[in-house]
Length: 202
Image (cartoon, rainbow, N blue to C red; front, side, top):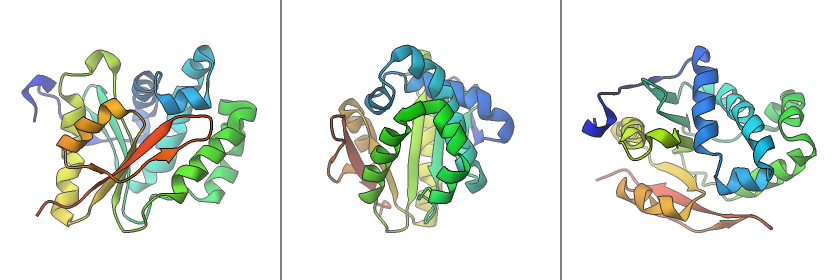
């Protein structure tokens, strides 16, 4: 555990954590290139992101791989091996909620997600769908603490990990945890993402 993380611990998130962890992720991703592309208006983005992350959490919760630090300083939403894909049925069932969040921009969202998913590796792996630290807590070790927690479990089970970084400034951070850039995902008229793969340490 990082000494800078103030003695925080990591635990599995439950349904009761939905509002708090979604608020943390919304603050963490307010200036993210992908969310800014999907919701250009800042005021609309501020309203929509908590709802968006609450939906992502709802979809991920059944996998039992969503985690929070003890004070909601950092959050991770993981998908287990062979469970990374969001099925069409999930989109259909949640269509009213998606429309409520994105309005007509939902088609841009679907197109962007489709482009990202087409380049997703199919080898069994743990997928770090989302990691975010509350901006006021960044640089204090909470992100590293929560990331190391699941990486240790993945290593113990001999399974690699995968993520897509939406900021080039985060690449050195992920590289320090063993992730390596495997290419680029360019969103038409939008940002570039960097897929990163982490082999199981020998």
